[in-house]
Structures are given as C-alpha cells and as structure tokens.
Image (cartoon, rainbow, N blue to C red; front, top):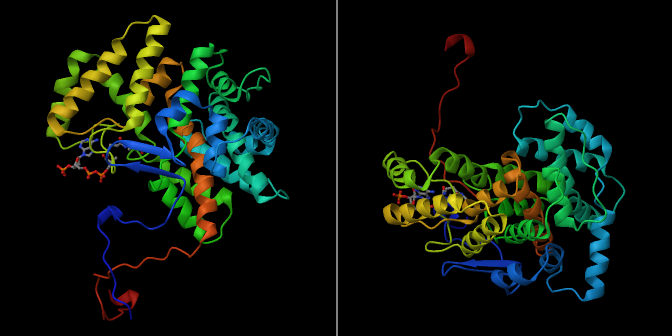
Length: 370
Ligand code: ACO
C-alpha cells in the first residue's frame, strides 16, 4: 500500500488541481483568466467578465451581445420554485432559503442541455436572491424591468427603487469582485461534488452551503453587524482591542492567501468613498471602516478582505443586510460553474484518506448488558 501523506490542517499550501480560471497571490494580486482584477473592475462589465470566466477569453462585440441575450432569455425563474420558497418559515436565514431554491430549481428544470442548465442558474440568481427575500417579507416576486441592464435590474429588485447610473455601476463593480477566487472553500466543495459526476444544481447547492459560513461568504453580513455594533470611528480601537483580547474574530479581516493586502478590498474601499461622496451623505461609515482597519493592522497585522468593504457599500446602496451573502453567492455561481466544468475536463473522484486514531478491537456488549 502506498504511503499516506498527511496534509496540513485546512489543506494550507496544498494544490489539489491545475486551474486556468483565476489566481490569487500572496503579493496581493488577483487575476481572472490572466487579466488583473483592477483592469476588469475599472473597464469591464459583469456580463463580459462572466463570459471571460466561463469561456476563458474576452468576447467579441457580437459574442457579448449574443451572451447578454441568452442571459436575459434564461432569467425567468420557474414559478414552482417560488412555491417551495413560500413554504419556508419567515425567520429562515436567506442563505438557507436560496440554497433550498437552487436545489428546487434542480428538481424542476428538466430536458435542457447542461450548457443551458449552467446559464440558467447564473441568469436566474439575481431574481432568486431578490425574490426569496421579498417572499420572506410577505411581498410578491418583483417584475424585472426590461429597460434596465442586468445589474441595474438586480439592484432595483433588491431595493424596490430605480438606481442611479452610478449606483448601478457601483453594484456591478462589487459583483465583478465577487465573481471568482480560485480554490476557496466553496469552489473546492463544488469540485468535490463535480468529481462524483453529480449535476450542476447539486454542485451549486453544495457551494451555497459552504459559502454560508461566517468564515467564508457569511463574513460580509457579519462584518455589517459588527460595524453597526461599533457605531463610530471613535469606538473602533477599543472594540478591536477588546475583541482580540477575547480571542474572537474581527469579521471581514484575514485571508488564507492575502497576508498584507486583498486587492479587492482596496478597490472596494475607494469605491465606498466615491459612492458616499456622490450621495453627499458624509464619510462617517468610511471613517469608521478605516479606523477598524487601522486598529486591526496595529494589533494583529491582518488586512481587511473583500467582505469588509462590500458590507458598507451594499448598506449605502439600500440593500437589505439579509441578502448580502446571497448576493456574493449569485456572483460566485459563475466561478463555481467554471470550476465544475474544469473539474470534469480531467476528472478523478476526490477520495482522500484519514488517519484513524480511534479505538480498535472492542468487544460488542449486548444492549441489556450495558
Ligand atoms: N480576527 C482575529 N484574528 C484572526 C482573524 C480575524 N478575522 N483572522 C485570522 N486571525 C488570526 C488567527 O486566529 C491566527 O491567530 P494565531 O496565530 O494567534 O492563532 C492568525 O490570525 C492567522 O490566521 P490563520 O489561522 O492562518 O487564518 P486561516 O487562513 O486559517 O483563515 C480566515 C482565514 C478563515 C479568512 C480567517 O482569517 C477568518 O476567520 N477571518 C474572519 C472571517 C472572514 O472575514 N472571512 C472572509 C474571508 S474572505 C472570503 O471568503 C471572501
């Protein structure tokens, strides 16, 4: 029998696959299919970056138009999925609702090709996120406005208000930042499910389950709750000091790969400032975030991650906190689909080993003799 290698805890530093989709690096860089995140953030659209991640190259004008038309065509959620959502108790967490809805979608959508399945999950995610929340609040599903772009429409369905072009642009930037991030916990989960040859709905449902946790996608919601608790910049230093002294986590900080800077966080930080300036609401929330950031660096040398600045941006856009993590999930579905397909291109089922440290040779004692 071959010798068993013991992997480090959390698989830290272990490569389990080759990928051409994205690469995050300890030097604070991130690329999607070879393009720097900063370039895509500044110059690309959600649909174009989605195409890039799915098909490995930037589309031509014609290909992009065709792709946008396809996303529109597949964006209608089957109504029986909303019937499943209606049966879920109102107090349920929105990630539980979305996970159930995507699982329901898999049991509902039959007779379409695997490519259509993948595009329909991606295209339906905005309506699913917005409408799971609306149904939970006792409202009816929102009707999409065909005159708006995909991202403007998404924001409109989330807030019930037509966004300004800058608000829609801001939201779209955040969706681009959330699209993909190489082999994080949810992408790995998706690849494990793909490796068993299960369908894309099962893989995305599992991805949603992994993303829900506060150490992963749940951190943007948790960071917002924390910022609300801290309240103002003046309280930041003592909050951070006390929390670290209790050995508790500061949400939205730390990262397995980025040890000095998360490039997405710095792009989002600048975006928050621009958004607040445009809205003329004052820079209080920006100053609060910066004070927390400075204190965490001072006491623990940890950088903020993308979730930290995503939270106040979403809040400023008027988005309900309960949908912060589902929004992350809706965008990351693109990365999951790419990982699902990449896994199948060179598949072997994931089946690691464990070192057994439990008892051996125990004698079975019948129930009435114990
Ligand atoms: N607050 C306080 N301490 C922290 C934090 C934090 N947010 N993050 C890491 N640390 C500490 C660890 O406890 C450890 O301390 P120690 O050496 O004194 O024991 C040290 O920093 C090193 O951290 P690691 O354990 O190496 O971090 P790991 O790579 O295992 O975990 C993770 C990364 C899960 C992101 C972690 O930093 C964390 O829990 N952060 C808070 C949750 C969060 O923001 N998650 C979002 C991640 S980004 C994303 O999913 C999009």
